[in-house]
Length: 365
Image (tube, rainbow, N blue to C red; front, side, top):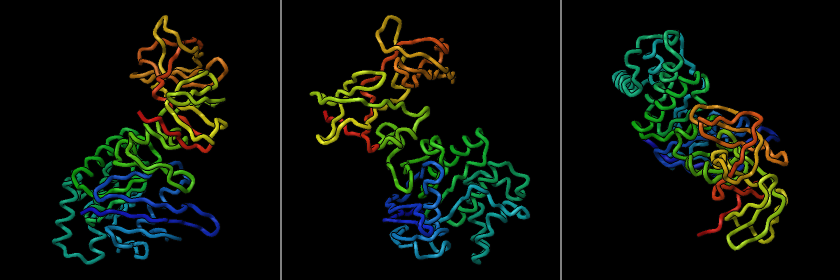
């Protein structure tokens, strides 16, 4: 079973403090949506409002077309998986998974069927008689997910469920979650501040910042076409390079932008006639700036720090006027700190943001 979720003009206030401001969002049945953003942006609060653990100050929330923001948590048809596993230590895995169903006096044979089915789905059938202290962190998290699955909810809500796991286990559990979504086909909403989790798991990412939604899109849409400077700097590792714009002129193919460090750059961007270059920045990702071949003309960059990652090398350097820039080179690069290299940028890979932080449109054709 899966269901759509509709969030309409939802606001959350604690007294005079507004933590979410008129949030609207539609989640399709069966979709895997990730709320992504820095700490304090309101993503966990929004998830808890869907679950019924936080009251809605203003606006409405619907699940499968039914308004639920006035219903108690147990009547909303959703199941939540928390950052903390919150398993009962004196109960076995089977008892932990069955406990919620026993509380609502579900028939025992139905409880048995659901627990066995969930254990098979999560491949923890051999652990049903163990107690939590005998399980690894990843196994405990699977039990917590199993406790949600047995409720057969309309939607699953995950509040940073992988943050307590070490890096290797987090990677494995992330893949297991993606496979679980494929098997169940259920609506899943997942909160994280980890962009790798978001890019790996999401059908769509909702990027949140300062009480608002900055952008909604597929992982590659928000990476390749960030709607704001915040999104451009938040998505991607290393963060996008930003070069201050000192002026621009309107050419036949788009704006000719003058930047600190790179000089005049021909772009395909257009700007409203009343918009000037003051406060604008030109953005480009490290992988779109490369080291020139020997003898090839380019812009000189002094390498300050070299980060060798095996498959690629990141060069953190400075242009002639001191502007900082990160450049990606081949993993076999021999560049050392203190070297000066020539670089070139892919002219089609630039992003241009106005003083208000919003991306400028590209010229069509």
